[in-house]
Image 1 (spheres, rainbow, N blue to C red):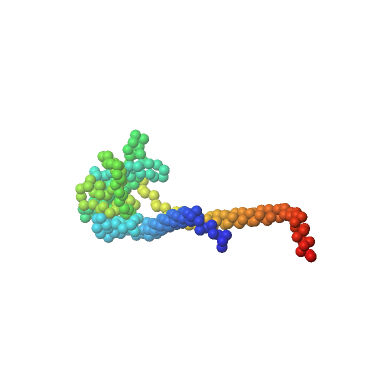
Image 2 (spheres, rainbow, N blue to C red):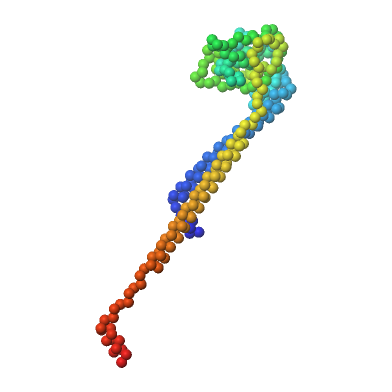
Amino acid sequence: MSEWAFLRSGRWAGYLALVIVFAIVCCALGTWQLNRRAEALAEVARIDANYDGASMPITDALPDLAAFDVDQRWQKVELSGEYLPGDEVVVRNRPYQGSSGYEVVTPFRLDDGTIFFVDRGWVPQADEGGPAEYAPAPTGHVEQVARLKAGEPRIAGRTTVGDEVATIDLAELSERVGEPSYTGAYGLLVHETSARDHAPVAALRPVRDEGPHLSYALQWFVFALLGFIGLAWAANQERKGLAEASVSVERTERTERATKPAREPRTRSDADIEDEILDRR
């Protein structure tokens, strides 16, 4: 065990601390990727359960004007009432298949008098700026089906200019209308009576994709393990280097001892010889 004694040095304690910190960061990132995968799987489950599911009356789905649960996303609801085209807005900077344009959001007064905001679809940006020409909302009594989606937050620094808004902020839209409105969710139009040509383009079906989060998570966990493997390899390399250095020192010492000349015998003096003769008598 003495050959591993160098591991008790402050230098190697520092190396170990760095590897532990690196592993903690890698594990945290791996866990984050697993959480993102769980969110993606939950969204896939919502799409499967709600997108093609049966529709229900809006009052059953959202009994309160501010009510909305994330598990209701893509739920189809039935609406009956009339559009309020005078309070229609367009939401700028909305992408659609690689192009930038606008989404058309029109207030819809339900039969009970409350307002539900309907995203009628996407229109491209005109060459001269602003939305290209599109068909106005149907007039008179309309029955339609829409898919629920949560309202969007207000973005600081992005202001409303006329009938152009930055986000589908339902609280802001409710203030514009000035009537009791649903502020928990709005609807993506699926179909309606009295549909017109050149209407805004309907929203695309959401993609069922859990993403690469699982592979990313495994990579981060492998990186954490590789940190300790790398530390062990480096320690073993240093052990080998110290052992080779020790053997080299011992070999050098043995060579020096073997090549050292023998001590020459001491020359005997006359007094030594005389003492030897007397001792023999």
